[in-house]
Image (cartoon, rainbow, N blue to C red; front, side, top):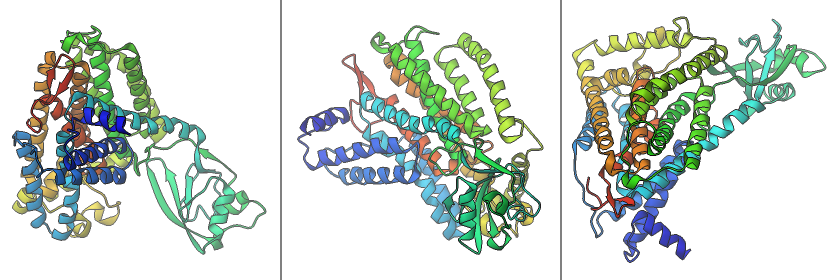
Length: 525
């Protein structure tokens, strides 16, 4: 145990003679690593680790030696965005609802937790390894889960079937009956017999819905197939992967950010071996071929997992991210080569998309595309409806109670949701100043990353890779945000701000002793 704490203290730059301060810093750093480990899987676990670590760090703040803070342009933009969100919530049509939603906006504070508790490049590298390794758990499980199959995919549904009456059709997959997973028709019948009216959750490409099925509608017969009125079934091998999250879009957005990080490290590793333009790596440090090989395998796995989510926005985001990373990391010639290599991969992905969801990449007949177009039209109309909406917005989540008077969701004929665009959502809910402030955050952060990449001669290759990955991930996040409200997804926003804190720390670290990048004056940036 003593050796463990000695290594931990060296890694986190903790003064072992610091007494209570040392223990608080140890707690904060350990829970920082747990935050990185949880982020690819669970919002609850991530928030728990973050809050415990943050509390330890807050208790440590007034103790000596004091942490020095420096307020920069990015800090100003982040806090201005949050303050404006508070103002918009207070003027909301539903203030209590909007104020409660501020909890999601406050996740930007995780940026400070990461920034001030990572003090060396070794610590940053460990945090990145922990996040990537943790992400690989779900990445490896996804194809295995797909091969094993799930649920009960029904075929030959008769007109008088108890499943046909509430609207089920051939190819639908029964997942749960009364919140219990089902894997055979016998389990479905047993579940339906347990209640007069049963809640059946099923999957149809793009949707998971729940319907009511009556026990009295079960048909007479000696077997489960006859009672259900179907001629056949099989386990389903076609659905949109969602990792250990509750939704495939969340998983896809997180994969885009972590995939960009992996790709950035991979490209920086290649550059350190002499590929592309000169990398100017500190002390001519070189990535080992084994490390590059592992990064390549992780990249392939992440790409496959993202493909299995069949989610177009993050896929396009990763393509944009990858192009920028290659261009910034290796140069124009390699960028052109990468584009040529990606063409057959892109064609294959489009074929998989068409077969999985029966839609093209840009398909005006696709129901989800039609829904987005409707919500975007309604969003622009609502935002420009009055000066109050234009400047202050209507308030976060106020549409949940006022949708009818504002004529949203096709007057109730379409499912209730959001405006499917971060930029439009900010305009409608928080007004034009909120959008301008968010664009300012993106611009300032991108500027810091670019400045760091321009001074790559003083950085080692993992530092360059992290900055490349963060830069590409930001571009991918901004691209996907055109058609997804990814900023409103707390799991995704947390990963974005975690990487933001890590990347901004790398920019401030300085080389020492020709080996590690270490913060020369803790707390300053």
